[in-house]
Image 1 (cartoon, helix red, strand yellow):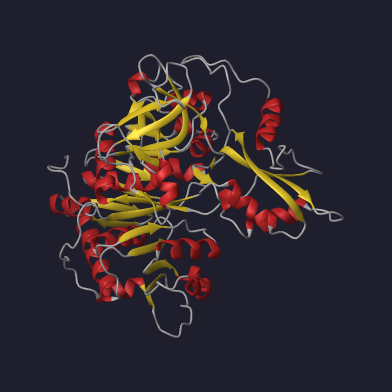
Image 2 (cartoon, rainbow, N blue to C red; image 1 turned 90 degrees about the horizontal axis):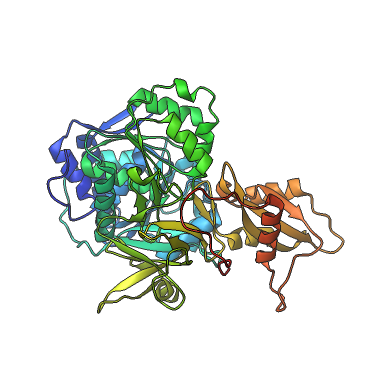
Length: 544
């Protein structure tokens, strides 16, 4: 069953599906099964609990939870209260958490009780922060104002009634923080209208229905993971929610057990799955489609996946946090152009533009530009950065998004990813800012200089590699330095390798020349394999 009419607000996805099929299972998390009626009730209770605690329409509610029923309830509850939510990765360290919450002026915070041991130092940096809700049965931190309460108790005490709507679809629905080139996370602003547009577009080309069972292993703090939840909720499908994708066997086990019809992966996940020796013995006959985004999938991996899932349709996709999704390749085009990420999604226009502002010719490299209602409203509190990304379009009053990603096109307009204009690293499907890693390395007492780049990796997509120069007379023990980095950064940002050098290459102005480091990596890897299809490679390298 497809939705009869487009919803107005993002939380209408849940309301409408609960009205159509209240007894349908909405969420499966471990042994927990939650129906749409139960999820709707919990979202209403959460909304009322937030309002009673002082959260007002257009406030921001931060959610730092692993994939769980509570995380989904908090997301829809914040929206139902008229607030915007920001989902924060569970492994985010206190200093970064304080920055993110302070940057957007978060009003409320939902987190595991075990993660609240740093609440005092976080609250000291976030003067706007009011109520805090703890998930779990552990000890709560001592606070002078008593503003920490148990999430479950707050929901149980709140009424299951809808709140009057005090917002419009141009209001902010979500902030998704992504690493910036300066090392400080940027808050990407998505409105209800924008998330609604991207969700309905993705639902249309994936042909999602209420019969789907969608397995979500990507974190809900990641735009790709969040999108899977919203698409499934929109059509009244069932979501099987897993907390992580560290191991491949539980993923396949969940596919078989729950008769999963749809699955979204990133190159890291697919590499893990392909290492399973008995993959061909698993009953995956229910799988209707599987998707890849957040990084290019090696052709060899794709070929093996198609043999492993012969009945399922594969969608190669591309997107950015700033617009959720920009392109997809129809499965019927896969044999003709396996290296392509397709063309624009429904209800969107995109093109590749050269430095002169004209569309590129086939095989020419340029920047991907995107036009549509799903494009972000900007970066929270960063008007200058916003102005560089959102520029005047062809029609009066509109803006279009300049992605900073380099592509070529073929004669039929299909897109082929080349590289990013900046040096952001995509590791395990997450964006990593080299500057943020470098900042931590520079804080170590033995490090004089540091440079971080991404290097190709068959499992991770890109691995983080760090180069460090020790201070004079000081020896760097890489194992000790790696432990220091692990204690200060999320796990996906930790370098796979740290190389100690006497000096780093420099430009005439004294700036560390990362292009030289990348050239060393490419030279060590040897010449690239000859492509079997797609446009010819550019004759000149793209600018750094």
